[in-house]
Amino acid sequence: MSRPTINEKNLQYETWRIFKIMSEFVEGFELLSNVTPAVSIFGSARVKPDQPYYMLAEHIARKLSDAGFSVVTGGGPGIMEAANKGGFEGNSQSIGLNITLPNEQSANTYQNASLSFRHFFVRKVMLVKYASAHVIMPGGWGTLDELAEILTLTQTRKIPRVPIVLVQQKFWQGMLNWFKDSLLESGMIGENDCDLFTIVDEPQEVLDTIFNFYSNRPIETVATETPFNL
Image 1 (tube, helix red, strand yellow):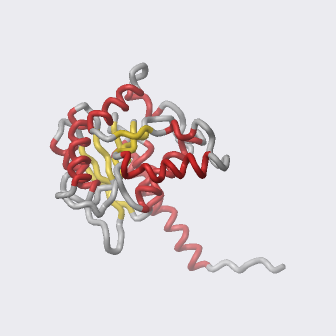
Image 2 (cartoon, rainbow, N blue to C red):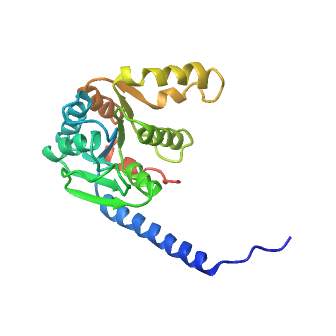
Image 3 (cartoon, rainbow, N blue to C red):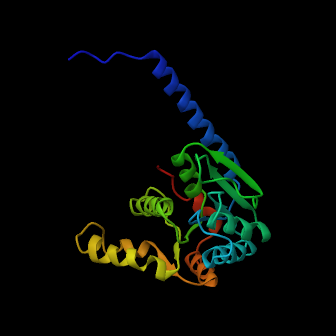
């Protein structure tokens, strides 16, 4: 079999693409390396300001910010905007890590610091790497993607164990039933894998879950406790 020919133009494009990806990582590390403790909040971009999930996310973020946690989101509209707004109005920093998309997402205005990414995977590293906890609000495909990746990285010990808090049991219950009735029943996950996350309904429960997790350990050290092996 003959060796494939090298397309010099394509090779040059891919080489420059690597440098662009590297530059996004560098910018993210520089911005977030000193932002601790921080909580990443995930959720739908489609939720409107007059809807209950928006107001709930804003309330949670405000309580986290007043408790000393920087709030980090995907920087867009919907629940991300609500969380940034709550964080912005609180005592700690509100940070948005936006993604460049053709139609759906534009940066919200409630940010003390922000970055814009072209690559989803770089942005997801930044949302996970420096977080001392993850709060998962109701959302669609993007939120499910982020939740699944966080659970996978935690299960495989590629990242340190931190609180993963799902908010609104009624919204998530169908998925949780499927986890137990299909994944666990079929042996696709282990008995303890459903213990990786906690489900709550009220803002104070989010704080209580996080502070209970860290009752015997300093929050500030978690982001650097073990290597991040994505």
